[in-house]
Image (cartoon, rainbow, N blue to C red; front, side, top):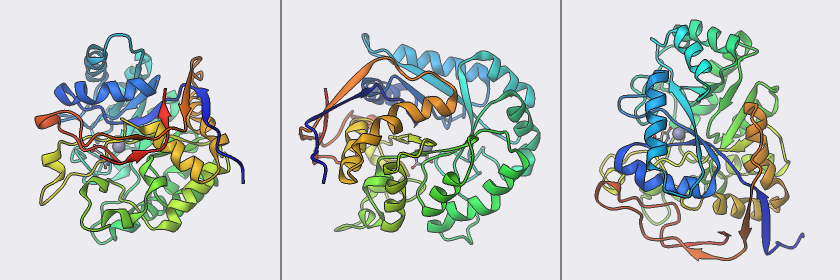
Length: 347
Ligand code: DOR
Ligand code: ZN
């Protein structure tokens, strides 16, 4: 057994999948992400969704406006793919230099996905343009067919949608976001340099028991939903192996407390307050801390064709207690691990 080091210095990481929202919620959550990460891929599922380059530019400006003085942070923007996204919009997004990917939400799969795609064939012309100009497709990989069990939706998506898509667009870069199953691990591992995956902290720290431990735990509810232990273990194992096409994407997704603690609670876990520390815990439990830097700071930039960051951060093996909540009123958020300890501290 390798002893746990007291501190760990790594290149500053990036978050390749985050929800920053807008307005007061943006102001509440952005400092948490910007404190840890140099860059983050910002999801476009606002209301209305970010479907054009002009909207992405305006949203980016609002993010930079909300950034506290002294923090250096680059938002990497995305467009929300709809059945009406013209190929010309993709070319404009590419030319803008600020859009790094286009997000596929199967219609009805998750929060604010109603403007998403009902049938993948309806966006083939747009995907053609993306493949030609080198614009990655970021995928929420779940089918929405109500006949498919919610715990199987990712595996069925891989068979029904992702593998055919990979055959039809072999040179389109795709990221299978927030993977949750052995099937996804295997699919990405068996893929080539055009296929990567992001992994959230919750999907390597928790299994689906966490949804029901001692009662219904709404703050552990996200989509794709937590799975069985063997899936968590398979994801952690591929990260511990140091595979280069798996990278950090928190999917930190804040919802006000009232929207979570309700008869029909929203999907989304807020983790930006302690993201890297939580990943460090998971990697330490798997005796894989030596692989954390590649996962957090190198694999993502390589996949996206960007340079890794040139500054460094240090994690110390020092516990701290997460607050009960952040924000207030409509931005009152219950964070992952609320009122409990996290065993690493970012200094
Ligand atoms: O849990 C989730 N929350 N999953 C998603 O795909 C969307 C996100 C959100 O925007 O709240
Ligand atoms: Zn997300």
